[in-house]
Length: 137
Length: 109
Image (tube, rainbow over all chains, first blue to last red; front, side):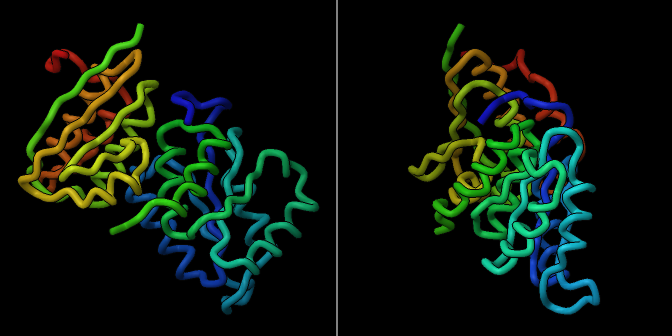
């Protein structure tokens, strides 16, 4: 991980969940653990508030989370990946977005802490993916 | 110029999620490699999940070690965070500030 940010601003995080409550709760937790300096956008549930994912919410989340240093997206389950990929196909700045293959809660916390420390896009995505290998017990 | 530094502290409270977060955010701002050791286990101080996985509790002895160009400042900042953030009500805004500036002066290595 790099000690200094590579671009301007801090890497943003978008949490894509089938549940609005799960996305919001994970965002709240990650913000508390990381000190509240990172933009974390919860993109959970369908447009009408049901369980599922919303391309419109993901697209809006990417724009809100971007502050010049890129955005790391964490999906909660595999099918959320389909929605994110569909959005990225038409997204103008897809090169500044990394989709992280990581456990949702642990990945969100690890990514946000690394972003708060000034890590660049690759470092933040790597922190999320390394969460898979960290034991709790 | 590279250096190494190590200091120990007795925790005033458990090393829960938010103190671990404050520690990892601060550690990540230093160029040096920084580790935290408790109960015979060592974690990368820049990994919040690794630090939480130590399960360090009140009264336990915790060692912070760093190697690199800003090792002394890193150890000073992390010892300060461990000292303050594990106290009841100790995780104030001031603790997060330790992650944003170099703390030195009272740590000698």
